[in-house]
Length: 106
Image 1 (cartoon, helix red, strand yellow):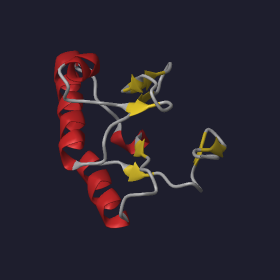
Image 2 (cartoon, helix red, strand yellow; image 1 turned 90 degrees about the vertical axis):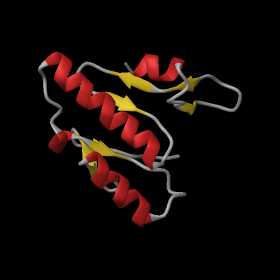
Image 3 (cartoon, one colour; image 1 turned 30 degrees about the vertical axis):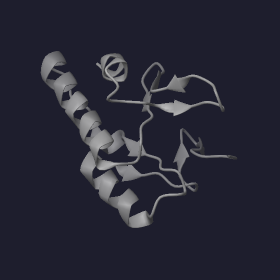
């Protein structure tokens, strides 16, 4: 569903480097990283895709184990509003994942 949204132009991902390809998501064994614009429309698209995933698969996303990271360029109140829309916590540079820093360097 994410690939289809990207092919249809609804989702853009992020560029790894200037002129490089866009990366809309990364999939690891038990983790999924989704990259999108920081706006309400992009996050509504993601919540809609997650709802479809849940209804079609019979599985449920555990939002208590989910988090969101924003670029430091966006206003804090917008970040908090969008994290609330996703029903997840906003991850900061001081948070850890599996005992390691969630964010490091640039």
